[in-house]
Image (cartoon, rainbow, N blue to C red; front, side, top):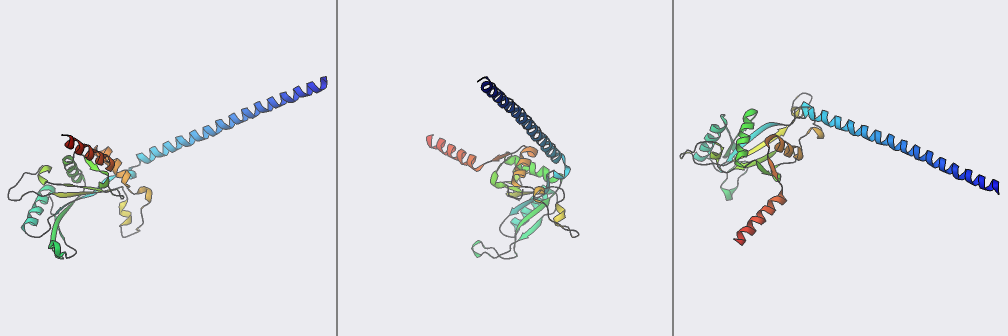
Length: 238
């Protein structure tokens, strides 16, 4: 009987010891896994920091196009060209119609609009003047999947140009093309190549640049619909 009880005690004690050793081993394994995970997280943060500090990743304005569409040739188109020339201090280019549309009295190859392309610091200056009219607020649908965005201004006198009764008032479209350094790789003649997906400017990148660089606000479509409904309800109540 004594032998039976003593062997049973030894067996129980061996089980307890093996269980304790297993707990220690699992704890050590968990520590190692946690350490490896923390190391990977730190490396990922370092890579993201290096990626953010990389000058080749900086987004810049490649060019900005100002367009005034008159719809017909003649004296009005000449006045619109004068407005663009006064605004940009450069000679604008006339655009021609590609197709004939009889219902709008549009003929093919007829000059219908005028536009100018601005680059560098002048583009940033005019962009800020145009966004000031919009209170630095743009809808999310103003941004394209390629990282470009555009908006319109109803009256050119809001941009700081004096009103001239002989010229009149014209509206214009702003269209901004964003890019990263190295864009010319896809358009150069020698050693032409494609640009990787990670180096292209996406819609989210353009929105982030607009918010951080210009301190702008991107209005979502759901938010706009709620604001319109609330305004309509207030009008109905009043």
